[in-house]
Image (tube, rainbow, N blue to C red; front, side, top):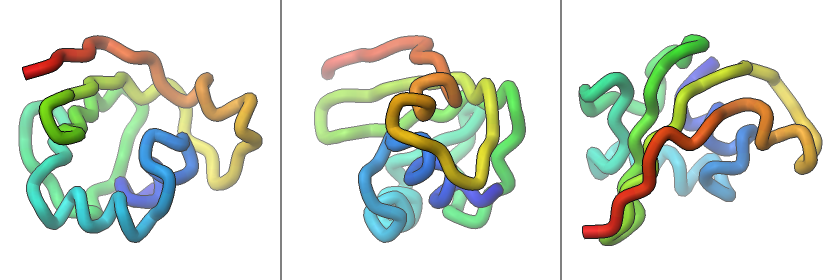
Length: 84
């Protein structure tokens, strides 16, 4: 699944277009490397997202095409949250 779609389905980022813009602005990294929105997400990947002064790192646990809001938290686990 594409990175931008994963971020939207897992509800880490609210809209796919916003996820795509974040990738284009180099604010999303997978396994320590800045990647494009077309990156193919795999289970076990570490995704780091910069939201202004806050950086959230999550580990991919599951990949689904669609999900309910209550089930979206099971798609990842938060590894760390840092504030600069």
